[in-house]
Amino acid sequence: MSQYLAVMNRNKQTIRGPVNPMDKSTIFSILPKDIVEKKVTLMPGVFNIPKGSPDNPTAYIVGPSSWFKELDEHQPLLEIPNHSLQMAESIVKDYCNGLICCDMGETMPGLFYLPGEWTAEKLKKEHSNLLKDAIRRQNNWYIALVRMADSDWAKTNGNPRSINDDMRLAAEQLGLKNKAWMVDFNAVDNIACVACGAMRNPLFPICQSCHTVVDKAKAIELGLVSAK
Image 1 (cartoon, rainbow, N blue to C red):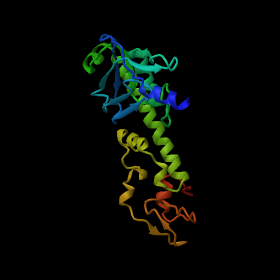
Image 2: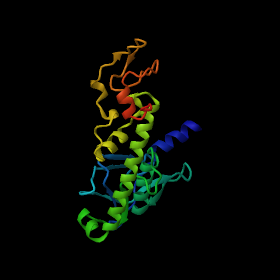
Image 3: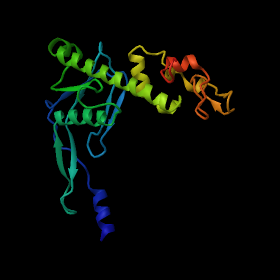
Image 4: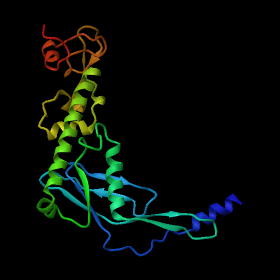
């Protein structure tokens, strides 16, 4: 019987009903990275939001999506529509909720949405306050990421794995490219520690194996040891 039901479920088609062409919302992004948000239970369920910037926000139009509920094995799947504003809210929240240092309030990426179909130019003219708020929140997020990166870098004795791509993006956007953890670590060759002989990162002043301070000036600059 279970095999019969499985065959029946596979043969059921997910056919959408007519879509309201006026049901549109707009997601704006000033985040300088492409976003791909997937919702496997919805149709359509893949949303590709191109990168934007404070000067040139991306305006991504979202329509309604549907999911399908099974009533029983003898009836067709029931379509449950979600209107465009629900989808815009879900896309933004689901993406941001999983990010480090994001509190979904005053510290978060520059993503927001409006009901209806908008352009970046219309946004700047009619809702410049929303754009300013998004820029402020995104800068707060960048600052929080850089602070965490500084802390993690110090705690791990310069382990490049403690720094993620968003942290490097934040430092770049804030003009902090001179951070030690902004170096392309694929191009760095480890050297032997003068104290214990273990291989260490030459850009970090403390050996991660024996904890010897091999570059006191750099360690003082990073706040890892006292200048006294």
